[in-house]
Length: 131
Image 1: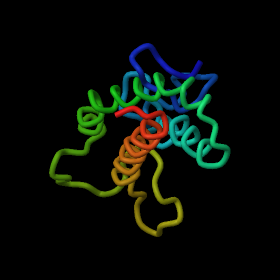
Image 2 (image 1 turned 180 degrees about the vertical axis):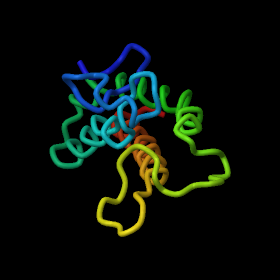
Image 3 (image 1 turned 90 degrees about the horizontal axis):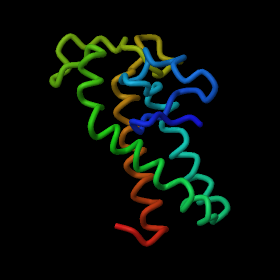
Image 4 (image 1 turned 135 degrees about the vertical axis):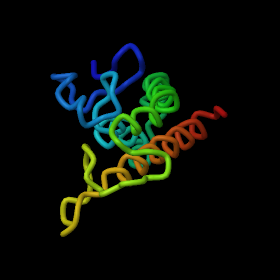
């Protein structure tokens, strides 16, 4: 109930468009929160060894990964991050380091959770014997 038909996970379950401005568009919530279902599924497996949950959710996680692969770079450009980070002042929309005395590093946070999504897909695939 938290995923759009295009594969995007929203940042919240109940109000799907609540944080669209903070994400990469098209209904995707902020990358950290939108990647949470995938990260929590992997953590659940690490803790409980529950392969049933992996089987039930893998299709949805792959849809999110396909969405990221298709839309992430353009979404980041629309947020004001160019390919060379010219003019980058660490103040884009999205989550970042809230404890820093300088600006929040939102570019790094978006990129990090994109990588976390890919790592979780690889982990879940390996557990399910998929490539």
